[in-house]
Length: 329
Ligand SMILES: NC(=O)c1ccc[n+]([C@@H]2O[C@H](COP(=O)([O-])OP(=O)(O)OC[C@H]3O[C@@H](n4cnc5c(N)ncnc54)[C@H](OP(=O)(O)O)[C@@H]3O)[C@@H](O)[C@H]2O)c1
Image 1: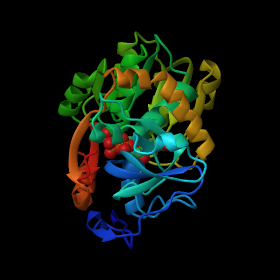
Image 2 (image 1 turned 120 degrees about the horizontal axis):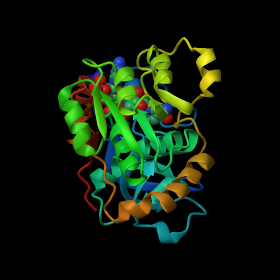
Image 3 (image 1 turned 180 degrees about the horizontal axis):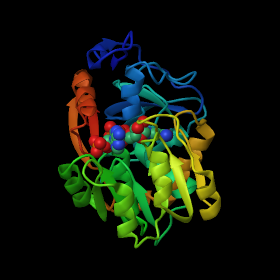
């Protein structure tokens, strides 16, 4: 099969097409003939050599795919064969075939194209487990999410709209703020021209937000804590501005704040299967009804993965970047 499997870390140019053997599914796994694979910021970090795949994961990048099930591992029911699915994978997505644990697959309904389906698992699992589970966001809450036009941010906006949250996002330009609002953000703050702490205080009449989903880290953490209401929750999912922060402990005590965070890729298959099952019950009815679709920025052919990464690194994208293999089920 054709795959992208760079021999060394480097710039986007290391992502060249090569030949690899089609992997064989083990017990509990399915082989998926890939139609499309989502591109995520962690793939860029992996390519740069800053985010090695966890033990046992393929060196081929790619954390989410959509396609049809082409072969079954031992103990996987025959009814799965030929089914259109999207899946969260620990790697291997940038290829014509990839393995997925059967428990991490979700059906692709008629309402979704393969490109749209491939663009969902990584951000859906991440936003669900962090914003709704770790931060307990629920109907009526106001939340702050940085990176309003990122893959993560646009999924957070979509889920906030479906589950009754008011969502404030930050973005690095007026155009991105406009894109986030078109996608459904209630408020979008240009963090380059406005102080988001002041704006959040204005928007919430001084009360603050119930939760912050933070992908920035560094000096943002203390500023995020200023945005939190009493009993507010702060969830870290990335540290783009630095992995260290100075924390005002007294503020945490006074307002009973909670600081937490997580990384999805390193979690085991049992956890990811539990999340998939929960998403199937809670979110998938909205997907099937056409009420939840990812915002797609652009798709590229698999062989042009370097161009896809260059676009992500340019920061010009709004929404998800996707690779297509040419297979259309
Ligand atoms: N913990 C987990 O399990 C997990 C899972 C998936 C992704 N992530 C992380 O989530 C983040 C988003 O991933 P993605 O795939 O959606 O990437 P993406 O589309 O490339 O988005 C990155 C976002 O970060 C924002 N950003 C970068 N530097 C910033 C800064 N200094 N201040 C404010 N915003 C800044 C950018 O916003 P502007 O362009 O508007 O500045 C952009 O929207 C990544 O950092 C990724 O590593 C974590």
